[in-house]
Amino acid sequence: MTAPDFEDLLRDLTPQVLGTLVRRHGRFEGCEDAVQEAVLAASVQWPEEGVPDNPRGWLVTVAARRLVDQIRRDHARRERETATTAAEVVPEEVPDTDDTLLLLFLCCHPSLTAASQTALTLRAVGGLTTAEIARAFLVPEATMAARISRAKQRIRAAGSSFALPEGAEREERLRVVLHVLYLIFNEGYTASSGSELHRADLAQEAIRLARMVHAQLPEDGEVTGLLSLMLLTHARRAARTTAAGDLVPLAEQDRSTWERDLLDEGTALAKAALAGPELGPYQLQAAIAATHADAATAEETDWAQVHALYLILERIAPNPMVTLNRAVALAERDGPKAGLALLATLDGDQRMAGHHRLLSVRAHLLERSGDRAGAYDHYRRAAKATASLAEQRFLEARARRLRAQ
Amino acid sequence: MKFLISLHINPAVLDALTDDEKAAIGAGHGKFIEALKSSGELIVTQALVDPSQAAVVTVRDGQPAVTDGPFLEAKEFLGGFYLVDCEDKERAIELAAQIPDAAIEGLGVEVRQVMFSDGHLEA
Image (cartoon, rainbow over all chains, first blue to last red; front, side, top):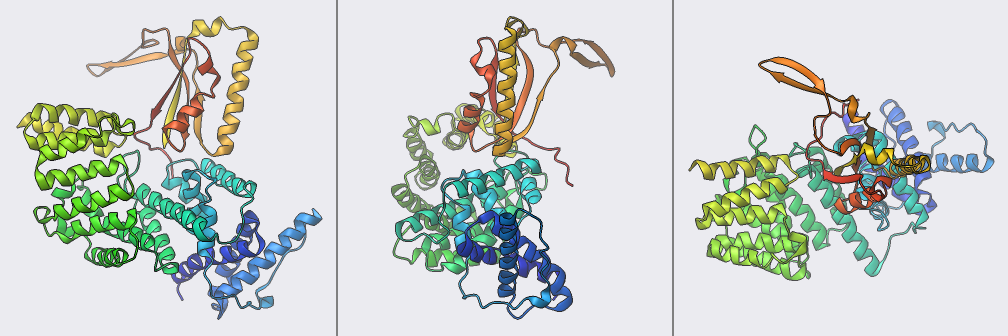
């Protein structure tokens, strides 16, 4: 095994081992320290002595010993010799269940803010260092360290049960987990602020975590839908920006640069997700993304299908953003006037007042309907309202183009 | 999401405060900073010297010139700021409301989202 293979193996095993320990002993923080020490021991010993037959059992055993040492040490309030040598390790037989899910449920605890849930998930399940997470979110390491430590305190204070929730609670908690993975992906895909449009590492990490959940719950349509949505979106990443970092809208993207294997995998998953008994928002968004993936050119897009899917999405998960996207599809199907009429229904919605997306979609539809002055005005207002530098440049360029014509 | 919470001070208003009131403001900021640090929301905070100490720099025809500041002809000046990373705009506003300046007539607390970040040097 080469060094990168060791790293991959340890990275995959770490959340499973941590999940197992947490399930048995509770004490999230203590378990985390113990698992980190066990992983460190493995990374020193395995390259020299070979990977044990049961690497997960080895890690669980070593980590459990460290944890017991730590508990004794805490009780005795004195330093103790805690050395554990590899020779003593007889890997225990751990049941062949993956405890990654349990760990994810814990990290995405409902008592935490989304910012804390994402940080803790990347730390404990993703195995990223605090410094790496801080860098991904462009904050100082001390800020991220404090956030993670506060999140652990909160989980402890909430008296969280360290068992997998069941029934309706499990469903609800799983939705939170999926939402957190979705947020991590989006953070990597479009920075909510800043000049960098892609932070690919976070997107890839989100895909890796979604794959882990999907491997555990292959029958769950929403899990499948989310993974599919991520893959289909990720496949287009190279086409989304020019070499200079400018945004390229879907209709103008060079579709030959879309990654075929990701599109194929995502499309197959979207189909599998739709075959299930119930439909959820991720499944529908995946189906919409798959419809776009299916069109060789923008002109060949099946807008009637896209519109129909948004209509269902709007019914099961009403949200002004969905209505906004449906207006785009409707305009493609029936012309800009129809799209503008649907947009008008959003004007009274407090959540959308002055929102840059509403302004920019209206600008686009006004331009297509021939109202150049109205389009110019709305592109300029949208450019002022957005918090994304790339989007601002794009909207200003659209406004300039109208003046130049 | 990153937000700059800027503190706009009016030196005349500050001068008119009693010593107790000034001490209460200082203590309030201290408490606020500690809470922000432990919640993992503070990126950095800085306070600036008196606006009378400002230098205004101009370059005309390639020649730099320096005049006494402040640049703005106003009663209120930028006195300092908090740069925070928090959940959303609602949370940033909630934080801004905890700053003692917000409760004093004539002092201004403003919240604006950050659009571009750089300067985090990699270790």
